[in-house]
Length: 288
Image (cartoon, rainbow, N blue to C red; front, side):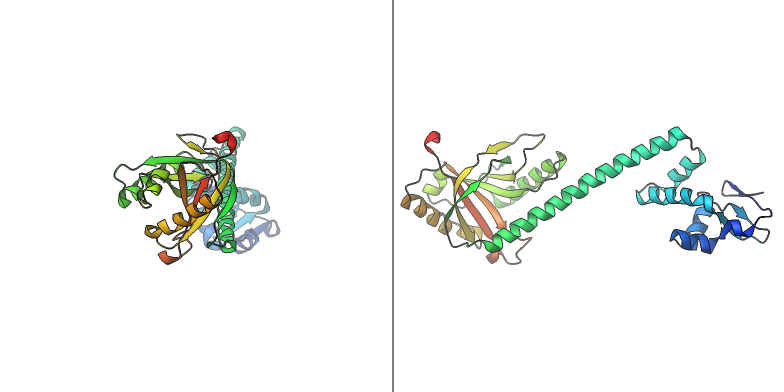
């Protein structure tokens, strides 16, 4: 018997046809010989036998154990923990480790599902933007939405960006994985005075009801919608078009507008190509 890295490997006579060499076993398992040497050195996975001349031989009965090691390794379990589990294994201990890893897989699946949903939503938004005529003012139907609100007392641009980062951090801490839009609320009082670029807030607009935290509800319904192309400092031109449409069609609207980026710096390289959606809900008879 020889002791190696806390493991005992037998040096005795054997039937060569019952075992695989290191190279054969490595090829069968799709790993390198160096991986097997390393696992042997740290006492994680030793060959079943070692011949008198020092050659390592692995049994076919070790394949399942190696597959388990590889699976746990792929799940991010440290080699030391895998070794400890194998050295002190019992049905109860193995069941416990497997249950933990199964929960980990469920979390990873949920994370990947959320990432896929995020990508799909982003693709949809880009596709919608490509189909939209930004020169027209239209009436669109929006579902009920939700938003996290952040007040900005001084209205400075840097303060708005800081508050936006805080809202995003709060959103992520809540555990929500849905997509969100950074948006702003502009009040009719400012619009009537021509103060189109004065803001005291920033919001995160989401389609799904947040599970935790403080949030507000943005009612669904018909919205007058206009699009502003270019720097937001010139957004007054778009408000003028929207107000003209509202007056021409004798529409009563909510007392605030939602400004939301449709094309931002993630999609467009130049600020002149940014697109901001400006929308205000039309009041029905029941709202007045």
